[in-house]
Amino acid sequence: MTRIHNAGAIFIGEGASEPFGDYFAGPNHVLPTNGTARFFSALSVDDFIKKTSIIYSSQEALAPLHADVEAFARAEGLTAHANSIHVRFEES
Image 1 (cartoon, rainbow, N blue to C red):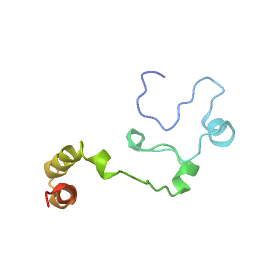
Image 2 (cartoon, rainbow, N blue to C red):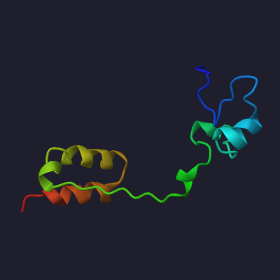
Image 3 (tube, helix red, strand yellow):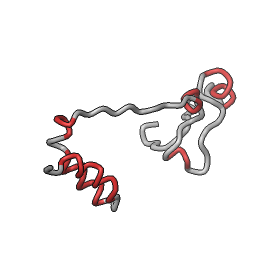
Image 4 (cartoon, helix red, strand yellow):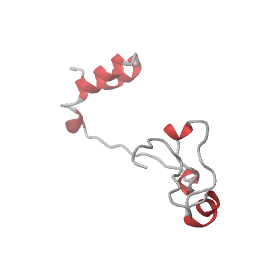
């Protein structure tokens, strides 16, 4: 088991049949196939929940970080992202 890196579910033992896992033990019957376990999990209630991130930062908290944030944006070629940080710290 410790050598398995990507799996939607791992069944261990003679009694751990797939139907046991699907219908009784808990993992969902809908498991990732065709190698998609590298980046997907079994279907769960989380797949039906909409999540929203809320980000807050004061100008003072951003001040020591703004040059790094701007550099990351420029490195990705996202000049509008970089400029949205840059204009917050331009000398008036």
